[in-house]
Image: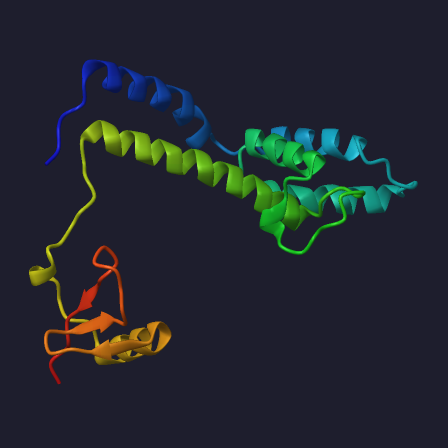
Length: 180
């Protein structure tokens, strides 16, 4: 059973949408993004780069960041400086500036967080709920998927379906058998 939003809840969600929408829907600006890159690179002085190397480096960042908003590049640079880069997997060397692909990955992650938040807030404002399909209305799973599921979770068969070995009542999950 669901209830509608109260005026206070609707007001709060509306303010959140107003705050997040400009970030999530920001238009990419290559020149502003490169300005943020320049600021970041100043924090990591490099040995003397020749004009050709500096141009190539600038072009690489321009290509990597041409389709992301400048605010995401600024946020990504901040994360790099703070060492908050676990999304990059192996520990990058934070003594050097990020490579164009690394900076792009961080910037896209920032943008994705804003877009996801905006989507959630708008969805809540529309009053939509998660779609729940009753068990009896669900289609049977393909046999290959059931076999993989059984082997992964060490399941055994029962007359009505497949039940995990010795689950607690709260954890019991019934998986219907497929027709051959």
